[in-house]
Amino acid sequence: MHSTSTDRAPPIATMPEQEAASTISARGLTRSFGSHIAVNDITLELRRGEVLGFLGPNGAGKTTTMHMLTGNLAPSRGEISICGIDLLEEPAAAKARIGYLPEVPPLYRELTVDEYLVLAAKLHRVPRARRGDALGTAKQRCGLAEAGRKLIGTLSKGYQQRVGIAQAIIHSPEVVVLDEPTVGLDPNQIREIRALIRELGGAHSVILSTHILPEVEAVCDRVQIMHHGELVYSDTIAALKQFESGATMLVGLRRPPPLAELAALPGVAAASAVEPTLYRLQFAAGEDPTDALVKAAAARDWGLYQLKPAQTSLEDVFVHLTRREETQ
Image 1 (tube, rainbow, N blue to C red):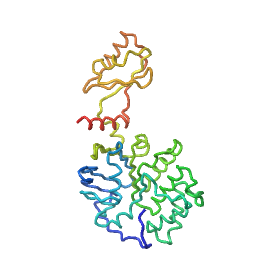
Image 2: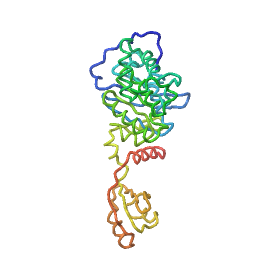
Image 3: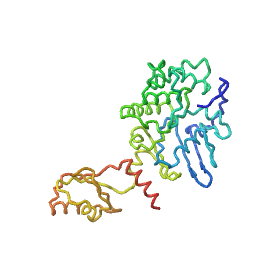
Image 4: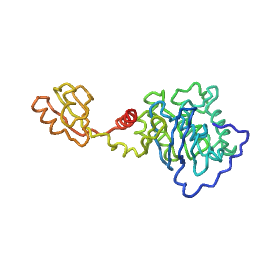
């Protein structure tokens, strides 16, 4: 939240027509800390009504990038446009269009939910006449309609996270940025917050920064992956699952041989155990080991009972991309 001493909203700059389809556009975004380059030449585009998953292992530069996109950290180089407004040239007008939930929500445990959200509305410069409606709408959307008089400190962590999201949308921003919104939540709370994120995507553009891969598959339309401060992938979830990391198959064997024997079959690049009698085989480039596997299973009495293509998961691609970068 950004403090101010007035209720007057910042001037809204005219949005260039050619940028109307994008809510965030970042070009050549770079941030250095001394000799360390934390983020190197990132390009990022967020479209209207889109939920973008921003992925990367710890230390990849995700949070630094989020701080730059929300105006909380100046880039060393590059430019950022929020709904056509230059963030560096017109920061107040640009920030008025952003709602931000940092990894540690900025909550005041001694306030009630209503008191805190009214404070958030003031800090986001919501006009006094609109605050009641803004408060009711934010609480309704975040499942807090019955929690207004409760102290934030008495709420479960899942409900505290809902309050954090409510403060991010209290001023009806075009863009909502969520940094690790489900960290520390139990499975039921995670499911509820994911449903809320999907709902937010219908009315806002959302950036979801996370290292939890199933979260991205569950709620996002598109994904960008960072590693060592650089962007290593950017495309839709559907395209990501088709990313060429080597074809794979699932093989069920009632009397399996040692893993090394499977890995040594012609055309097999790698073999791993999924369950005691279920294995994942990765094909070598341009190879198909199916015939060799079937012949070996019959000749050596492995008890082949399942053979089917394995769908590439987001985790498979993520590991492939980040490990590839490590070895280059």
